[in-house]
Image 1 (spheres, helix red, strand yellow):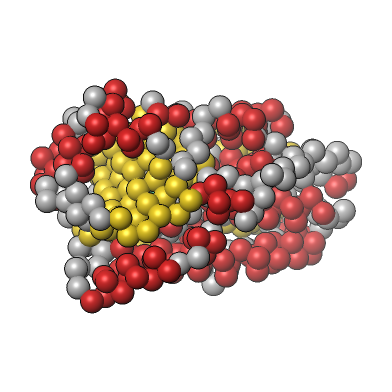
Image 2 (cartoon, protein in one colour):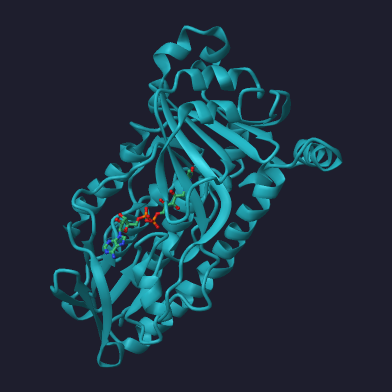
Length: 408
Ligand code: FAD
């Protein structure tokens, strides 16, 4: 199998080196820092939280984003924490197998790529370690309140809530779905859009599962399973080579207005799945406590970049999607890779005209793809949640006929 060559850091003179501030140390922000550091620039990250880390549980990294991570020189570090599932199974809500895709065979169509499942904390830490190795400076407890464009776009000043001011040649807003920087860019309040769904996210220890022959197979034969049912679906896969079991339940949103994350009621959650494939109620019996996340999206924007060329956006801040294609972080990492590639090629990136040109290209490369992913995420909501009947049977037939390569 072909390997992907890791990039080496470009050495630049002071005249061609940019000072870049990335706002937000999520997967997208740290990814952007790595890509821009490899391009030879200086990067600082400003993060609002007091500690850097990832909440949540598992994350699937599909072949497209595994290529990006390998090109950033992270294959070895990541393989220590990754689980490579053998296949993805699509099941009906009663447990009937609809279709199965062999990950190894499909990844072989794209040499050097992988399907990887991670605990988010491990993926995030590996990214952070790589960024630190490349020379990033990170400031925590640094909530950005405003961005001011200086002198016809030659630079931008980030104003922290504390009043501190920091000026850079380029500011990248990777501040997530509730992005403040997006509002600054648009000049108006712009709340995320509700989708009508929420996610229960569970992490189970696999010790108890191994005692039950019905559940042990999930651990001993790593696979990704999707159960599709009326108005809801469920996804699961193992993490850390079988140490933990990740489960996400996607159901209609019943959260009060204004809440984004709440402690969930385990009995209420179990009741929603009591008549599904009997293995699901069994798994839910092993769960002691759970949180639920409201699922919102961002439909994209006419323009991601300030016309000055000193400020752009990246990741969920621009194109947060329903997680039904397991691609939100993948899109943020791809954004970062494209941004880094463009800023690695320019010999004159300090000129505001050149920055404008590069950011326009960045937006042109990323907009159609990320808008398509948000739109397809919305379609999957309908597709996955069909009630039993002619449309559901047609869906199942279409899934059986699908070329595995289409899923990439
Ligand atoms: P975030 O991770 O939200 O990071 C934003 C950062 O900015 C945060 O650290 C925040 O504290 C900081 N910040 C915010 N405001 C400010 C400010 N004003 N100043 C300074 N800092 C600020 N994607 C996949 O690719 N595969 C999957 O399997 C997958 N599964 C998912 C399952 C669920 C249930 C959900 C909800 C999402 C899933 N995703 C998945 C999507 C993925 O989690 C997100 O797309 C990704 O984490 C977004 O990264 P980000 O860096 O853009 O934003």
